Length: 91
Image (cartoon, rainbow, N blue to C red; front, side):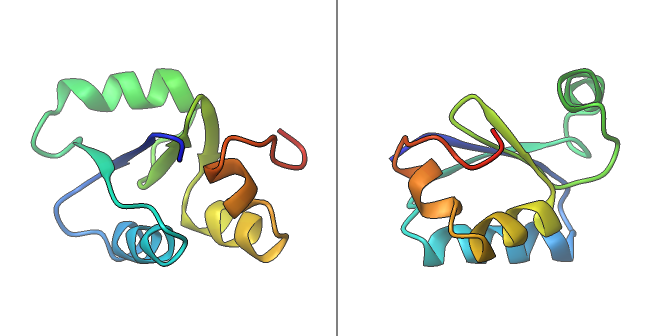
């Protein structure tokens, strides 16, 4: 199982939905970076992803994007293979 990192904030409905989906797909641990609690990490997130919104999700070294991107990847059948270390379609 690949490492999952998620940039998030304390109250973020999309972050909660992303976490629920990841757990449904077998993810036991998500490294969360709270950009509201660690404001200096917001700049890191923007630099790494080019985006300003949360969540921003990495599976291994692959930037998946936000919740909508994660859900679309799951619907396309690419989330579980990516979590298992296989290449995702289009990545």
